[in-house]
Image (cartoon, rainbow, N blue to C red):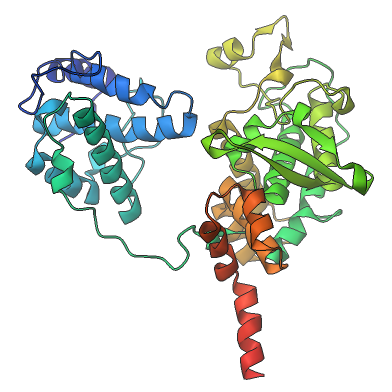
Length: 416
């Protein structure tokens, strides 16, 4: 059992001890990787994804959880894991002890826990498949004799008729309330307070709230009108944004680097550009100067040593702050916080159901929103596929199938 007071530093120490000894599944022959211990082999595997931040974080999380479990619950090295250990971990994932669950904090904290809550069946299946792939790579590298996870079945999961969770898209009526010219996003961002160039804004400052709202507005419109993933929004650069000549500035095109390191072009209405301009004014930048700066960048700086060091704050000004892109997690927090504040603002014209939708909405819902609305308006599926950056048209077609309003309209025709 994982003790309530266990500190990660103690776990790391035990990991080094347990994983240093070769297990019964360790291949004694020639190994294709430079790994003496199980932790060395793990680092070799994860190093393959060092340029794929999201994949790296996801795999590292699943493998770290398993290594901690092996150390605390089984006292077995990675190279000593057998089929029964895999089955036991699969059962563990289906019912995680409360002492393993806690709120997200830094790993060095005594309050850190490996899990934030019980895992859904899909998450359990993902964990098992990730570990199976990891062990298979170790076998292919001749570090292990065999892959015990090949003898374990995936957890049972229900097959959804909407596998992409497109039902999380913001309904068109609520989206219109948010983005129209005099809509909610415009109202919450209005402020007569202006930011001086290079001025540091702290979270408790009167400037902080409207500035954070303007960042959130720019991010929401950028992702919601272009179907961007948050990683793509964080990586978007002003250099790759330009007006579409044929539309006389009413439409802009943006080249973004998406999954599998593939570039694609998306298109933005002038409303998004106006929101970005406001955000750039808060950063003390000229939007038309066309420097190679990220489209979105943090402006409010927490008064913590880590934040001070990160943003190179000296003599009351933030050097290079406007040039720093958001991390995906950082942008997630800004957007999520803004949506939650909007849901709680009694002055906004929102029904209780709409407030609940905003509380539950996450940045990826904005990508779903773009896709479902584009499908509802009859955008050709090949065009939508290119804009979303899908490899398979079958993936894009899920938005067409799941677009509820279209389904209702077609059924009404039958019964008319």
